[in-house]
Length: 358
Image (tube, rainbow, N blue to C red):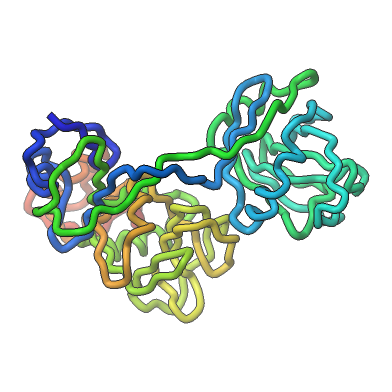
């Protein structure tokens, strides 16, 4: 048997199967008109943009912002060893470090920090008193953060260690996190043979956020067929044209991280859906409606004109037009209680539902 990974789950299949036959035998979600990404491990290793910070409490892994990554690669060794300088309920700080002549100028701006963000600050606005700050909770502060680097990155693993850091703890070293380089196997899935360790992705699982209810419902309306056709692409995003609408509410206009899904709420392409390959700053014209929970690798290899199979969590909960009986069966599958109002017969057609939105 050959061990492969299908949509993030480990499976075993006979070695003589094609990728298509393997998917069929496993009952994996698949559509012939949608992209299937097949990947194998290459011989090289590559940097990930993530760094492991070894502390006396354990390893904290951080993803460095793309814009500051060149500076970080050149200077992170200057920050790699230091003690816990000070801490509060909101922040833990390692330092001080001497960053004179490193091209960053302290500022006196006040900014908002999200939980798990890592930033560079300057004690007394002095470059010789630099520090690495870890935000333990959402807060605002003035730390001398340079305008050139308002944010270094965010914690992606080991965040539970932040709460326990205290006096006497030390930063012991920083090292880049390397990974095996993967390469796309191009071709028809019916003609590609399965290989040991191969990864196969057939769909995106998108988890929706309750903070953007109206724009998320707009997205669900565009996803009724379960497919997105990519109409535009850039280095940082993929997008799908939406149904033209005059306006959508401005909801959850927060940071757009890799894997974020947004709906444009104003401007020329109002109603379009965007999928982010790379981090992007917040925009008032983009409501963050969800994130890709599984299959984010597909974003790196999808081209304009290709189609992606999409599964949302939750799926669209609209029963208007169904009969009472159909609605009961549909909602029961989702664990939702159906309260019948008016004509309660199974064959009665539903003309209104509450709540209106999923």
